[in-house]
Every structure is written in structure tokens, then in C-alpha cells.
Image (tube, rainbow, N blue to C red; front, side, top):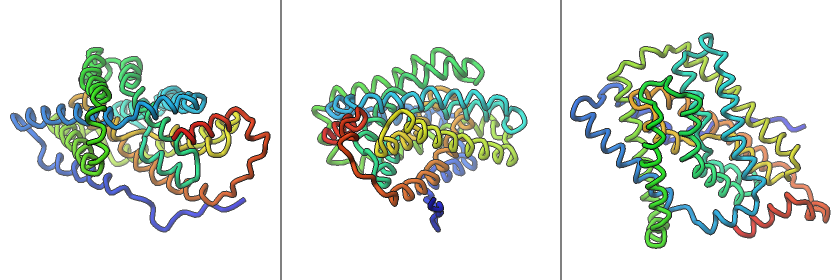
Length: 346
């Protein structure tokens, strides 16, 4: 067996640095009074615009073509919205030894958010996996998460977190799902503009997330929620998240093999099924948790950076694996046929 070599430089996402800087600004200069009202209103508008862009970017044709590989997408959705939450619920037994109750709630919320799109595609491409399947799997997960995540949060978190109630489900539908659908319905007129200005609009949506982070952590500072977190608790959280990520990476890889998927599909399932979206999770936490959003998103922020570092190592390792020759029997297998269809349609 080949040894797993760690790269000399682990990939630290520059955007994570900006996020941490935003947290620092919120700690030193939190928005208060009228300034907090302005920041909250701007954050609400930014979230709605962010999901409008998501809707305008998603090609309906790509989504329909991706349905042909339904077994893979069902597997990813099951990992994202069933297996992950079950593991999150299991960490309840670590309170109060490793986690405080607020950190556990934030970790549980992290397990409820949808999968990533961009990084799943990038790592699948590096590892020579089924890229079209990764595109569709990430898109379907993000779309389902707009509805599934708040429903799961309502069922599993309930009223245990201040600011969260059943009305949050209605609120998130109005603030996230309606703008997304508006983006889909107007895509005929806005899709071309979005495609031509992808880089500029990418900066806009990332800036929107920074604004959401600033608003959430400002509210947390004003409410004094950070007095509940100690360095030892943060260390415990990191250990728990490392174990959680390792378990999901193993389950998605070997579980996909047990289900009969080929190498390319297993790669797509592993990277799409083991990851959580910071871009989708932050706006949702802001809507669902209000002033308590800062603690709710802390586990997600840490998990996001951890998954990027670990998956970058795995993708690099998989890119060096010898690709087995495709036999006539392999071509006749259902998963191979579906994978080929998805690849041609993408």
C-alpha cells in the first residue's frame, strides 16, 4: 500500500481568513443600537440576493439531466440529511465532558446543512472522479437544504435555542426559498448576465456572507454569548469534528463501494456526501438563531476549514491512483451506465 503523504503546505482558504477577520472586527466594534438595525436590514437583503443568485445560476436542463443518475444523488442526500444528523445526535453524549450545550447545538446544526458545490466539484475533478455527478449532487443538496435544513432544525433543535421557533420555517421559506425560485423563474433574462459576470457576482455573494457573519457575531458580542466558550471547549470541539469528518469520509467511500458504485462515482459521493456548505449554512443560521447565531455557526466554520484541508490531501492522493481498464461487464453494469449518461449530459 502507498503511504499517504501530507503536502508541505495545507490549503488554508483565504476566505476563511477574511471570515476570521470579520469575527475580529465584530468582537472589537460590534454593531449596536441603530447601527445594529441597519446591519440587520442589510444582512436580510444580502441573504435574499444571495439566494436569488443561486437560483439564477442553476441550469434547469443540467438539473433534469442529472436526475438520470438518481442512485448516486439519493446516496449523497441520504449521507447529508440522514447519516450526518444521526451522528450529530450521537454527540449529545459528549455534553458536558467535551462540549457545552450551545456548542453541541451548533455542531448538530452543522450536520443539518446541505453539501458544498464548488469545492466538491474541484476535489472530484482533481481526483479524476465523476464531475458532472458532483455538480448535480451539490446542486440538488443545496436546493433540498433550503427546505430540509429548517425542517430538521425544527424537529431536532426545537425551542432549545433562543430565537428559534416554528415561525422560523416560514421565515426561511420567505427569505431563502422565494428569492431562489425568483432567480429560477427569471433565469431566462438574468442567466446570461450572471454567467458573463460570474467573477464579480462571486465577490458580491462572498461579501454578503461576510456581512451575515459580522451581524451574527456582533449580536453575539452584545448578548455576551462568548463568555460561554473556553479554549479547552474549542479544543474538544475540534477533536469531535475531526472524528466526525473521518467517519463520514470512511462511510461514503466504503459504503459507496458496497452499493456497487464504480471508482469515479465513489469519488463524487465521498466529496459531496462528507462535506457541509458554509455559504448555505451561514445565512440559514442567521435566520434561524438570531442573536445566538454566532455560536451556532462556529462549529460549521471550523468544520468547513477542516474538510478543505483533509479533502485536498485525499484528492491529491486519489489523482495518483491507477485507473482500472473498463471491461465489457463494467460497461453493462447499471452504475457505470448511469455514470456514462451523466458524464455525456454534463
